[in-house]
Amino acid sequence: MTQSVLLEQIKSKKSFLCVGLDVDQDRMPLDLKDDPDSIFTFCKKIIEATAPYCVAYKPNIAFFEAFGSDGWKSLQKVMDFLNKNYPEIFTIADAKRADIGNTSVQYAKAYFKHFEFDSVTIAPYMGKDSVEPFLSYEKKHAILLALTSNDGASDFQLLKTEGKPLYEKVIEQSKKWKNADRLMYVVGATKAQALQKIRTLIPNSFLLIPGVGVQGGSLEEVAINGLNETCGLLVNSSRGIIYASNKSDFDQAAGEVSRGLQQRMAIHLRQKGII
Image (cartoon, rainbow, N blue to C red; front, side, top):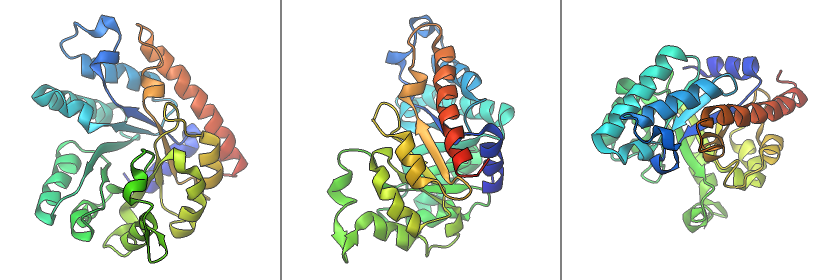
């Protein structure tokens, strides 16, 4: 998917919401427990309820991997369902992959050609040759971890090198890589104040912002500090949406939470003159 198509969706739906599919069977409604394909059934109902309000879905690969071959089959069904019924919605494989070049080539093939994701999250620690294989696909995107919302982010990302935090060096260096225009970046919502400086480094890039909701990130702070002239944000909420209810109305509850976030996002898009 090109960024222009994604921007059309943002304007059409007045939303920059990404719904994270972190599928935990222990938190599913009891009436799904006996479903032989409960992972897919849960995801399908969440997607149908939230699709009017979001522009992206982010399956968290670990939550599928945890079920072995059955989990991979469910992921395939989720992606087949999305690509057939909602081809206009941007998809993100939250896999945090990257390895030596020939291994990254295979990772890219798996997520872009087999599962047909539009993008995949990438860890930058191994550098250029571990990332560029993901950037070789037209209309696909690599979403580079820059400044994350977890407690351990300060272990490395904030270390000073040449007088600036390491995550800033990662961003600056990544701009020199081949097909860097296909890069997006992860910045945690709990680090919203850093968005002002990040926007001076990558003013036109899309930023994936996890951490709004259960992790305590503020949508308002993210929008104020992170929106650019065309939007440039995908704000993700996972548990706060998909587990809004653990009863049979879980999909309706997810839709209501998504609609609430979309309405708040529309206000910021209007204030910015994007819609």
